[in-house]
Length: 328
Image (cartoon, rainbow, N blue to C red; front, side, top):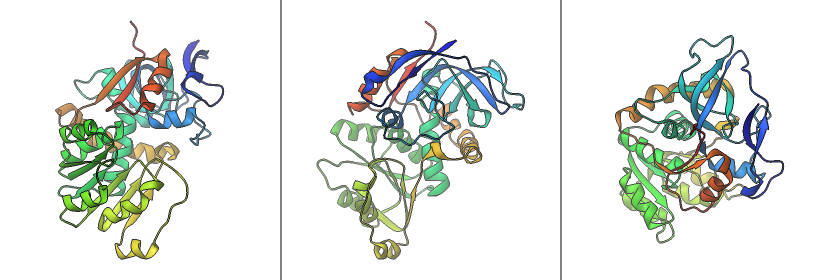
């Protein structure tokens, strides 16, 4: 037997409870990882509240990323061996002693990083890379607007975009998070509570607008995001409020703008494998070199996952909240 954080019905953080579960065995294309640390993501909070569509194949426990040690490999797996220390993008199941994951979603831990730091990488790196690099084609010399400077996505996206030579503009809801965005490499940071982010973005780009927008807000920002786009710009929506919003097709066409809305968890395995291969090739070396660093706000013992969710929901964190399951 092993343990996992589970909940029997949607609700507040206190529905999360430690329970005993059956030990796992890998399918032919999987490995089993003994979880040392797991990242907490906004999707976990939404799923706990019953507001997040969960794929039918996903494990019961929450948790979309982890780091740990491989304890078993499936019959068809050749790239990994027992004893390998790895991090992984998960379909779920990270809030547990062990998790089974397709081998194609596993990555080596960048040199010099701890298990705690490595657990903060897979979900955010795969989300940002798949959207800004693979979909929007963000590159050197381009302008990008990244909403949510203080979140796990934002703290990574700002650093990664700056590292590849993009000109980064970011938004946040407090002066402290604005300053954090600037320290991480943003060229301009906007407190959306005090400033009109559309006007500030246009001013920061000399009136041209941005080539790409990474949006975690959703419907509430849709029309204003379009105003921020340069001709041929790309708006990528990766989360936030759902529901109806007004779309002026003529305005969209006049800008030759593109809009994408994606959910990493729902992608099929072959797409996730391509994303993880790209992250391993193009992103992990940036962590190893120090060009991008992991930003961890708080580390919480795995059995206290409810407290980690409360911290996330407080909106006071900057960077990642990590669940620690290392033996003590």
